[in-house]
Image 1 (cartoon, rainbow over the protein chains, first blue to last red):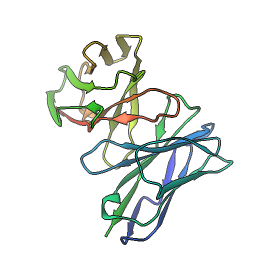
Image 2 (image 1 turned 180 degrees about the vertical axis):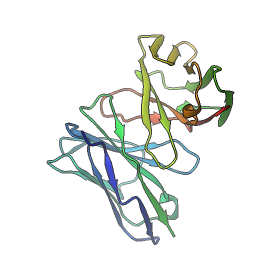
Image 3 (image 1 turned 120 degrees about the horizontal axis):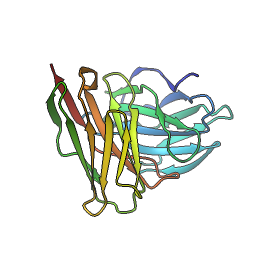
Amino acid sequence: ETGVTQSPTHLIKTRGQQVTLRCSSQSGHNTVSWYQQALGQGPQFIFQYYREEENGRGNFPPRFSGLQFPNYSSELNVNALELDDSALYLCASSPGTGLGYTFGSGTRLTVV
Amino acid sequence: DQQVKQNSPSLSVQEGRISILNCDYTNSMFDYFLWYKKYPAEGPTFLISISSIKDKNEDGRFTVFLNKSAKHLSLHIVPSQPGDSAVYFCAATRGGADGLTFGKGTHLIIQP
């Protein structure tokens, strides 16, 4: 049974650019959620996808968007990058919309 | 407005003794509470959870206590081992598509 894998592990982007982060869910998991963890903070919920539809969203602007594919893998897209977007982005999958979240190791995004 | 608070950024405990990590919350709508452990360069790993209808849950060396009237929960680790050194996050959720609300974490250091 494979866990949650994220790519890339590290990324440097320039302010104003766009970025796409990728996540492969754990086998059998149909729900994926994304979190942003800034330095010294706990992870903050961005949004959740269940069976390819966004069904929950935290307090993030529309320039944070996502996709979930039929194989339950997922993308997080961030447009018009700002310096404050520099953070660790974590993907978590679960077998339903309840608990049982398994986290990936994250993508470290640096915006310069 | 931080809905989940971990007021101790760090805690140092001697090996073999009890580690007690504390967490306070403000949202009375939370139904489930979880503890995650995080090592550097890894994603958070689920440790133990508790439903709001219970006041205690045990799993091996880990016990979580919930005091709903005080909106307070704690994680007890007995006995503490060197491998327990990590950052511990308290998280809460209403379930469903609401995602997890995390505290800022407590860095637990187990001293030999």
